Length: 183
Image (cartoon, rainbow, N blue to C red):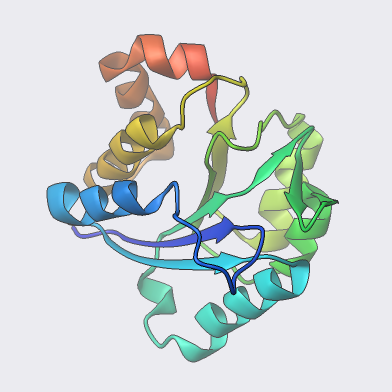
């Protein structure tokens, strides 16, 4: 099975030439793991909404995308866009009912540590099958583990099996980074 991934990265200004921290990893996903991906940037909440609207309403292949990969700064379960913090509850409302069956994964540029109530709210409102990310602030980008996670997502249907396999194969880095998945 071939997975498809949509990556959205927050940048300071979409009109300026900025080198992406995530593009080399996306290239590796395509070449090494045969994971098709689409990459876009945004620099405002309107840009986030516009990118998602384009994906949801103009991309006929949206239903084929299984993974929504979000690369945003933030902590305390808030993402930062254009120096403003948005809670995951607010983000859930942007996605309301639009992510049925999708995995929403946050790079470790944002620390994700949800309580059960917030996680369930996010899943219920968005329709996503799972939300994942990292609890711990570490000085490396999570792409090494992200790519392994996405590769396993192609192999297994059950998210709990994916997490078990990820921890089995990459225990030290998964534990150090605090990889977590809510479903």
